[in-house]
Amino acid sequence: MSRRPPEPVQVVKQRRDAALRALVEGIPYVRFLNISFERHGDELTSVLGYHEALIGNPALPALHGGVTAAFLETAALIELGWQMIWEEIESGALDPASLTPETMPRMPKTIDFTIDYLRTGLPRDAYARARVNRSGRRYASVHVEAWQDNRTRPFAQGTGHFLMPLPDG
Amino acid sequence: MSDQPSRRDLARQFIEALPHCRALSMAVEDVGDGEAVMSMPYRENLVGDPSTGVIHGGAVSALMDTCGGTAVMAHPAGPTSTATLDLRIDYMRAATPGKAVTARAVCYHVTRSVAFVRAVAHDGDPEDPVATATGAFTLSGIRS
Image (cartoon, rainbow over all chains, first blue to last red; front, side, top):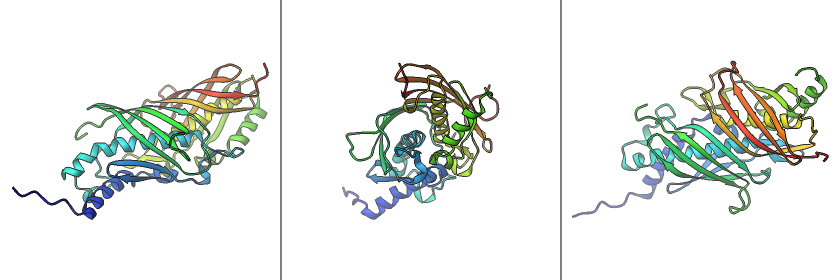
């Protein structure tokens, strides 16, 4: 009865970070908005790195509502895609080293998305975390909250419904 | 709708100076009473799915949000400022790669403090929409 020793920390990190990179790196619009992702275990935080092109109203100044919408939708979609591949990455069914944007499993598609604007988006970095409330074989419902200075004072929240990709589809 | 070039020109000047609208090359096509038409050209850096070249839903959202706000500002009630309270976007289908997206928004009702908006986005045929949206916007500067 010998137990397998735990994997070295570098091996675990490398595998998970490679999978996350494959998931997000190939998306031009994510790069254009300057969205990156921080990972702690399986928990993702989306980070919207501030730059001038994100401003909607220069008089305030404030983030464009469309930027906020795109940020929330991206955070929700990546969280869903991440949960979709996590098991396969961890079990070894999917090898992150062989994953490229071209060979990635198909991503879910947005059916609808509702954004609640709670406060003005300030001209600085923003963060978002998404929670998959339900993920069935065909449909998923995801809630996401975004904040800037205080985690407990979100400036926007959103809920979206997503169509899951068909197996091998 | 095109009988008020001055208002259209003003809206164009205002919208097209907003940094994010410039970054997405949004253009004001037409402005009428509580109504606006805006377009956004196809660009590689707006792509959300590199395997198909389809633009990201977020870029369509940004266009519909801006177009909705422009429709509110163009309402005869004469608001001096507006901001999005909430916006729901329904995605009917993927926008065709290579084609510009055009949005038409109508501000169909206003109270002293809230404006209600509907918008449709298409990529050539208004009868075959890419997405629709409904939203509530704040409204200020209305004399009661």
